[in-house]
Length: 99
Image (cartoon, rainbow, N blue to C red; front, side, top):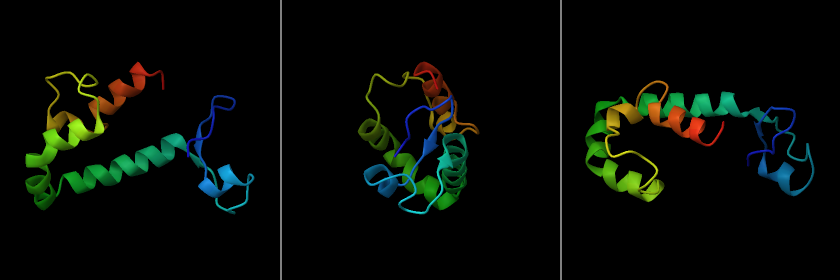
C-alpha cells in the first residue's frame, strides 16, 4: 500500500500496518523511489533475457491494452521505449501525474 504524502516523502507500508496500526507487522516502511527502482531494475533484467523477449513481444499489445487505458500512451511508443533505463514511459507518466 502506498502511504499518503507526509512532508514530501512517500513510502510503501505493509498491509498489516495499514489495517491495524503502524509497526504491527514489524516490517520497515520502504521509500517509494527505492522500491520502484528495485522493481524496475528486476523487470529490466527479466525483459532483456532472450527467452522472455520471444515470449512477451508477441503478447505486448494485448498486455498493454489490459494494463493501460488506450488513451494513456501515444501511438508511437515502442517496446524498446518501454524497456529503456529509466523507462521513458514511466518517466513521462510520472511527470504527467505530478510525481
